[in-house]
Image 1 (cartoon, rainbow, N blue to C red):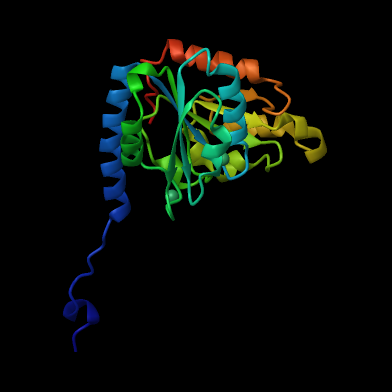
Image 2 (tube, rainbow, N blue to C red; image 1 turned 120 degrees about the vertical axis):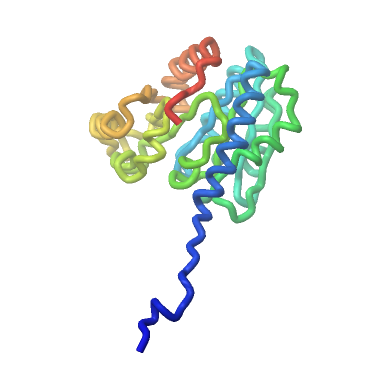
Amino acid sequence: MTSPQETSPPLKVLHLGKDLLASNRQHAAANRARFQAAGVLVVNLLSAPGSGKTALLERTLSDLADRWPVAVITGDLQTDNDARRLAGRGAVIVPIATGTLCHLEASMIGRACEELDLTRLQLLFIENVGNLVCPASYDLGETRRIVLLSTTEGEDKPLKYPLAFKSADAVVITKTDLAEPAGFRREEARANVTAVAPQADIIELSARTGQGMQEFYLWLEAALVSRSAAAVHR
Ligand code: MG
Ligand code: ZN
């Protein structure tokens, strides 16, 4: 009698995830070099669906597009709804339909940049697919990463999705106008962000009322000034 281990060939394990991430890292490095050469600040926005990424961008473009040349790459599964919401505000919008893919990859950003004259831009936002899981693992070559947390979500989101929050340069708490009706426990949420992501600046705002937007713009301005110092913790 021989044991099954002796008769069957060894199983070949495919470490596909690792290979994909290694390839993504190469594309991200190429993007980053290109962004630095063009002197453009690239901000990658991550959040769960419905946290207010598009609303934040709508307000930001309306307020800033005539001050800084700005463009947005939007990643959406099926629709170009976000891109249409952002159009007509003085920014170039490049929509990416990811199909069934639940995150953006660096190679997609490289292709989308073919539609843009990077040297004429100061600021490029990337609105990632609404998902707090895998987008966290995909470096897009961005200069800064922002994770959004809305007051209508759980205060424990940072504890549930630590990878995303750990990679954030700033955490933006959105929909502060809804904090009270939602029963949002502000101190608890802030403590959870700080526990998981001590490196991240915390900005609270409402894109609807405008509260906190000036602080957000000052944060962007500071990032623009020091844009060559790309985040080194990724
Ligand atoms: Mg959106
Ligand atoms: Zn994904």
